Amino acid sequence: MMDKVKKEDRDLKLKILEASRAIRKKHMQLKLGRADTDQLLRKTFKPITEPLEELDSTLKQEVRSLKEPLNKIREPLLEMAAKTESSEQSSHSQPHQASPFHEYLYTFNVLPRTYIRGLIHDTSNAFDTTFGPILEPHTNLFKMGNSFINFSGADIVINDKVYKGTVGLYELLFKSRPNNFTKDDKNIYRDILLETQVLHRDFDSAKQCRGNRSYKYANIIKPLIQEQHSGQGYMTFSDAPYQYVYWDDINELVDRLRLLVASQTAGNTSHNNEIMSILEELRETGVIE
Image (cartoon, rainbow, N blue to C red):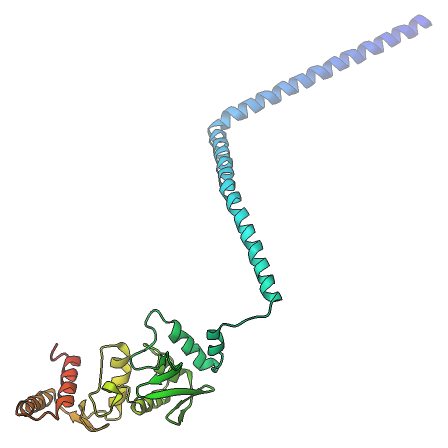
């Protein structure tokens, strides 16, 4: 009986041992097969994987090379930001002290203030200093032609005459190339030009009208002065204040110039202003250079 039990145990152990060997053998076969498969895949995709691996390596190097200078920049920026924040906190903690110029600007209404600030800081000739207002340094007052300009709120006061201030009127007064103005703005602007005599030499209405080749004079001022006499021909200023002479034909204007020159040659010196005005007109129309 005991021999039979021992034999059964031995047989069971042999079966377990054989099963274990079979399992190890199968595992080894699977392992070898997977290795063969991996080797086959690497060999198959080698033309693709190798360039990708090289690209990956290159990109990592470039990222590292970029991080180094960025880290060098980052520290000064953080330091600058900290200083700025500290400065702002300091400025908020102390009473604000406005500059004299700042205080001067804020004595004006927001509309004139905008154009005054622009005029004072202008470096691109965007503001008209020939026919527009200018700031007299010794008085800190604005002058246009022979008249001082004052501001009452947004309105403009010249020689006790009040002109309603609009954006369009300020554009015409201050800018070299005005925008956003209306016909009413232009009419008021013409009144101011005549009131201040800014178009005349020495700002004297008895003297010659002074023109130039600027955009503003050619496209706004000259047509505006002539507009009220539309269709009456060429215009020059005579010696009398605000009295105009009109010409229907350029040839008549040239003939008039000949007569004036002949009169002047004969000793009459009262035609100087009209002669200069006709010459200016002929230059602007391209008849003479």
